[in-house]
Image (tube, rainbow, N blue to C red; front, side, top):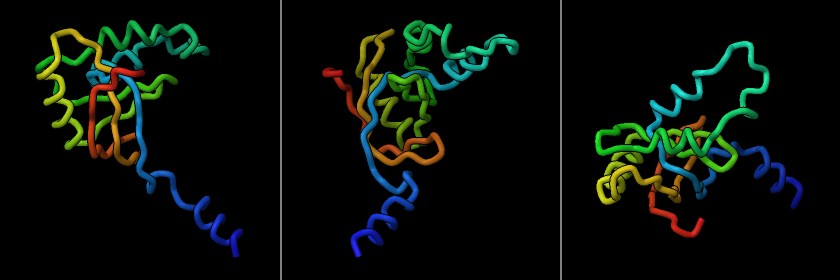
Length: 124
């Protein structure tokens, strides 16, 4: 009986589970443009990238409307509409040009975070 339960849980899609994500809040349009701006003949696309520079370059401003969360492994997850609204509130409370490391709680589906909460994460 236990193995049936295990099979059912392991077969469920990962997007069903809520979780926490940690990373840098970025302007998603800017970050996508940098991500797509590479030599088409380059076979080592992630080796030569300076993610710290890209995150600083794409620091959100007061005018940013769409946000992304860049995790330590470089994966960029987009925020849903509710998450974008919450991120705007967070950015308005921050000093200009500040790279915000945040903790996002919610569900992930197909690279988009359905945000429950977003907070500044000072400890990471």
